[in-house]
Image (cartoon, rainbow, N blue to C red; front, side, top):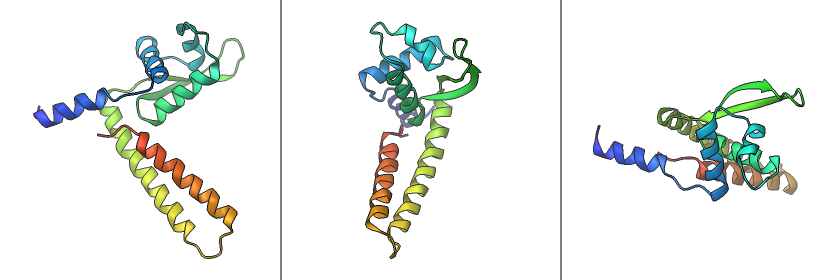
Length: 143
């Protein structure tokens, strides 16, 4: 394999995450496929489900984990999403598709923002949406 590609792949795998996001990633890596509800028991600090679920969502949006299936929670009977870690090829494919999708969405929103008949409230909503997608793009794993 080309040295440049090998170096790129190594740095791609070792991108920095926040402490809690890294802990969540390691639980998914070690015990996955797993739901956020199942992952709770592997954290020693009794953190609430909303903090674990949000880390799963962030990791998924950043291209670290993928949705595998949905199954019903034994206690509630409600459907839960099951996640597992993506391999390098899947991460690269996801990054390319997500980056293109979000870039297209930003372009659409910027075009809408330039329309002459928009109210100030609508312009603010569009600005917030543009900022949201730019942040998603910034946080996406880059190749």
